[in-house]
Image (cartoon, rainbow, N blue to C red):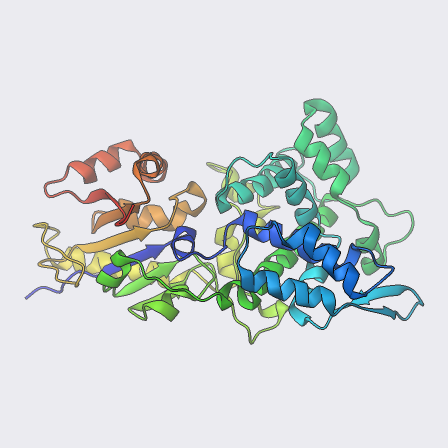
Length: 420
């Protein structure tokens, strides 16, 4: 008897959203605005009247979970004024997580830039891919317009802004300040920041933003009680779960299969330096330039997965699936169900809550496009079904999509989620 195929479940941020968790980038930015305001709002007083005014202005009309609102109000009420070692007045809180989030966001060019885009409604969409695409735009533009890390930052960005007149580049240029960074690096007074300096500060700030997001998830989002389960997930019994989410939602609610966080996960026990969460961009170079233009590879997801030791198991699963398919004779009769009953060596891949965007192409295309897999993509509604089909074409090409969809029996299908 031949070895049976595997059942793989791939999860994206839509999975957490389907459970009512505030994990959109807009949720995070709205939260961060209110956190940073704690340190800036009426610092002349710390009395209860000020806390009440803060609550009225920033919290009451905010569409957020009540547990998060309560935590921020309590943190604001705990404000104290102290003097630092230089005699300057500063605000301190009893809440360690909020204090660290504030430190991560302070003088952070990505937070300042992305928040401004968000407030001006200049983001392309509401998904994390849209958040990442704004980072990609800046990095790609700088990379395309310089080849030497010793080039002077101001000369490079100034020339691009003057040539293109791009408003987003102007905004980013204005948000990037090297003052605090130069103090930290102990630069000489005549030092002119270079492209290497930009790369180091920009990546350091991206890591700080990632840490702030981890603390938001750990201390606030993951403490929200979840009172519902998704029917499709209850019915499904996967061998392996590949999740692009940082949260432990699947493990907490469903406890089925071997769960692998391909972009890292939240961990309350570790330090900021040990954070393994991947927040980056896709590869934008093609051909030989992918191997030659490597100055900004550190921002790319595949590189971060290597650095942070995530990603290996996904390829291990794929290798196993291909082996099983080959040894079974590479045929499929179509018999498969959610209880892992496979009559032959084809592995079934279920995708839930992932936009199938090209930023995760290196992983997704392997599982969705491979001959060894039959794929079911869950869609929120008919509108998202069309978007997911379009994104699948970008991942595996129209020819491969048609080959799998028209295979008898079909090896690629799109299914509307129950209850929608």
